[in-house]
Image (cartoon, rainbow, N blue to C red; front, side, top):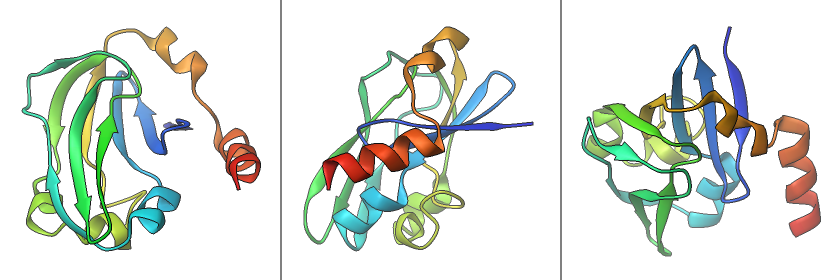
Length: 125
């Protein structure tokens, strides 16, 4: 059973066991516009919560993708590098960016659930 969380920086993560799959939200993908380039972290890299670990470029802007939690990068989505448009067509599915093995499950406590993220979007509109 997996659990999904969101950040105020518009990343999502889906946690299954001690591994979190991370990407940008549909809201972020829509705000960025058509994605044209993605730079992903190297597998094996240790990252801290809040650290910029990936870059996404669109026709409108470039943006950092932050690690919502601390951990070690265990996998990256090579399909996204080959076809950055996956980040637009499947932002919260096949357009995921990387997977982290969680350093500390307690890091999840400061993240938003689906209802909390929707409320956050409503406040920032």
